[in-house]
Length: 365
Ligand code: ADP
Ligand code: MG
Image (cartoon, rainbow, N blue to C red; front, top):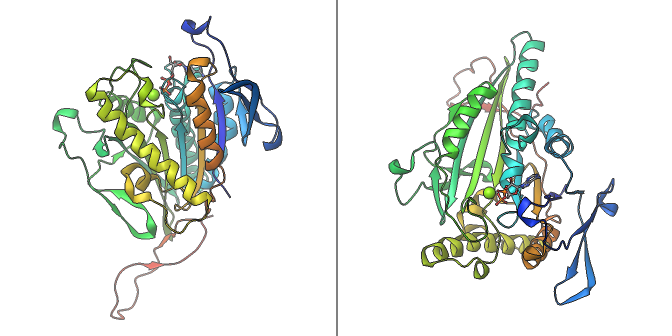
């Protein structure tokens, strides 16, 4: 199983009515017919074609993308498989719109829809098991800004300037040390927490997009499923990456340049990792940025969907081409679809000199 890469082209904004469009797409039923085309910037009569698992044009809705790309992963999440959904693209291409979305019900992004589905499925599972199975949901939410990790449940004035530490946990997973974990059991509770945390996100005005965020935002939703015999934990991560644009063209001042350089560094390391994985090199430079340590594409066991956000217009030409090239390499990464080990809760064991819980592989259901 490889990383599933899907492309989404956003519609024209009101301010773009007179701007030239450069992308054409074909939203086919499979990879062979799902294509994005873009002219060669050096020779406009020549066109490059990129194939993806699926391609969504300007008219596509949040509902369509959720139903086809995110909803199918929820079944696996409940089987103990971790799921990562991330949005990649230049600033202003629709990453936040796709992940978070707007207030109106139809505008809601992948994240609130994912939570809504998780809560619905949890309640159905608890009901059908007559209370034998319980599902607890909790969330943590943090950003990586200038290669430092900050808990978004902490207000900015309470932040330690150096940020939180990260370390390797068992199973090769990377964890952030000391993150707040907020339990939540309804969509309403989730929304209150999520809105409050988003207000803590670092934002700054750049020439490309006044409200665009300059940080990577990572939401982790932890599911703990408990039956009389075992406890199984799985995590859904939804990531809104910082803009992948070239900082030479954003007209940044010095302070912004520092931000931009470090954002670009982590995305640059991500691109190097993707390249190294593609070439089956033994050394993948994950450790060179916090974002890549956390994302650890191809090292994590689980399912991974990357949504490549694209703007259809000419000012994005070079950035769009570089995003398409990046995505083209990403889709070749193999991801192992492995269930997390359940923690088996049998009867108390006889004293044998060892302590602790027995780990057994046993599928839930
Ligand atoms: P990013 O997070 O990648 O910087 P945004 O999500 O902020 O980009 O989107 C940039 C602008 O485009 C916003 O005004 C947003 O509302 C709009 N937009 C993006 N995608 C869509 C879409 N699919 N439908 C309507 N408007 C969109
Ligand atoms: Mg954004």
